[in-house]
Image (tube, rainbow, N blue to C red):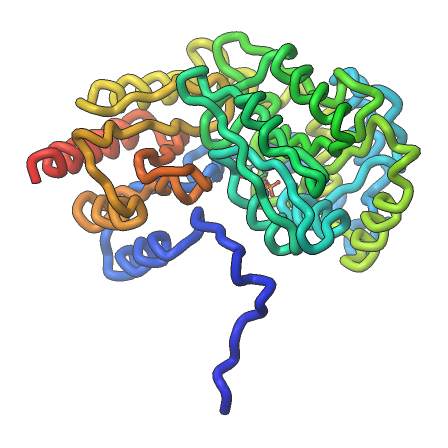
Length: 405
Ligand code: PLP
């Protein structure tokens, strides 16, 4: 029999967060090793449980949740999301502008599949949450990466964005708060992005899944709230703000210049219908989550658990010779830089693999986030302070050996 090959559509698709190093880590666990995992932003295994009220609501509604629902989602959930858009000052969003998906992940892929023809270009941040680049490639498009500038606290480089716009550019992706850098963008930066979008008729895809995970008193502005004349597609969900990744509940909101987007919206409706609907039991959690008090506020308060873990991880990492790191203002990650003079790394996946084999700590390499050079890695600061201290101590020991090689 001929070998069965994967589709050519997957040739340029890459998602290294769950790549070969994770497979090796799983093998090691099967062999009995304990691995400290700082690789995935999944709060539950670290004791960040979904709020009880949400769990109780899902249980309560379970007997009535065994049928399909509307392809766009339950009315009550979409109504709650609509009210949320009002709190976020996104103008004129109707129930019909809201689509619920099996997590934001499904909706990211759907939104790109509905938009792109072969050769279309999408501006994607570098570094990025790599699903964005993967979804663009899978949909036949080409991700043009714009630089987020580490020297400027990882803010998007507006000149670089401008230089990368071509006649084929359809859209720009903005991840705010950002994964992996933790940057939170000011209104001025968002307005500069909107000015370019307006000038070049780009659609703005705003991934705001961490919009409540904010430190040091930062507030979050939805880019869609700053422009009624630009088509914005905003993404949010329960995974991070409400520690419910496993429920797979996310949403997409269409706002702004909708009247010229009827055909695209028809495409979104078609794709939403083809997958029938999103997981119904989890949709019952949305109204309770958005209507209640049980978000993440206590955890990100100055003495909250997440803030303490961020501070400890940042301090310990930046105490290591040759390691620098912008302190994250939001989300769950640090994205430290290794000085190439001390750490001349040629292949950062290999580097991360060696760390795993020697120290049993699992990270993701910077190039896994489409970063341009092998000199960064991402650290998830969800583990408790004891585990973080142990893990970063091991990273420091590994780096000390690396410097002496
Ligand atoms: N967008 C960003 C920036 C993320 O970091 C993640 C998950 O880590 C997602 C989207 C996917 O979220 P969901 O669990 O809703 O699929």
